[in-house]
Length: 63
Image (cartoon, rainbow, N blue to C red; front, side, top):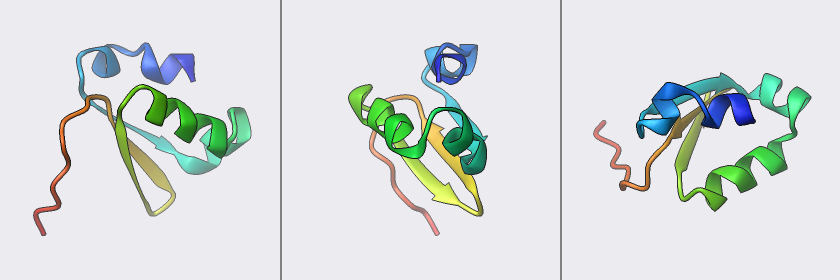
């Protein structure tokens, strides 16, 4: 978890993507999602990937 949130992209408020199966295997889904919420970030899941928006800006689906 530290590796994801300490990456340069995350620190700059960017977007990071991880395989959900890796998240579940390494730290656990519930713990990872709780950390995303604690930081005020947003995330979406699609096709086995989780995309984390490392900022508190609103998300708007465009299509």
